[in-house]
Image (spheres, rainbow, N blue to C red):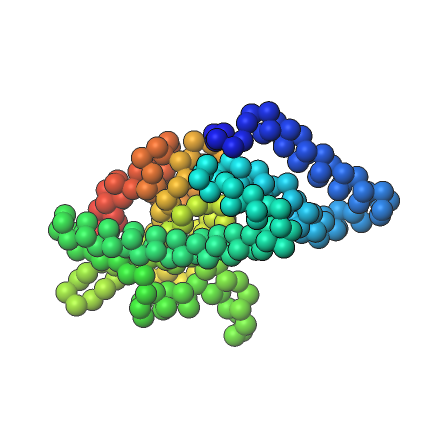
Length: 259
């Protein structure tokens, strides 16, 4: 969506400039190192170095697209100041890096609270927790050892543990990995499901579920990948249900099966 200060022509020109910028970077690296494989070893560093220069053409675009008419004049002052422009990049990254884990942590707590309220509302002998001795105990059992040495650690993100209430006892039934987005570490949970046979029986019987906030599963490889899990529940009404991928509101149907 193009906004007040940014035209379609400017957007088209920006895209061409962006492609040209990165094309020049790789061409320069290939000439400098001659052997393309050596250049390949340095692509990570090349990206990091390019990021600093890319600020000069990415930040003005962002400001022009999203700043309001009332504040645009003030932002223009920032764009003309090289030091402030660099600081804006660092500040923006800091905000994003802070919000990402913060959102993930709160999302886990929200999911846990909604589930506990649902268990009570529907009279199910279940409860869930995001902390405590049971969670720590499960985490320790996810490490495969041989002769006292760790040979495998298949630990997924144990964000929530679902427990069955039997009198005063609490019996673990499932692990929930809660992720706002699947952009990071999704294979960690899937790999644990693959190698569960290596783990003690009291852990290998646990179900592994994924609850995610923003993914709609309308495309992408994750749509197939997550079918290896016991269930995937999405807090997004636009989700395209497929196989084990379902709306969050159907999660209790799954829990009833394993009671």
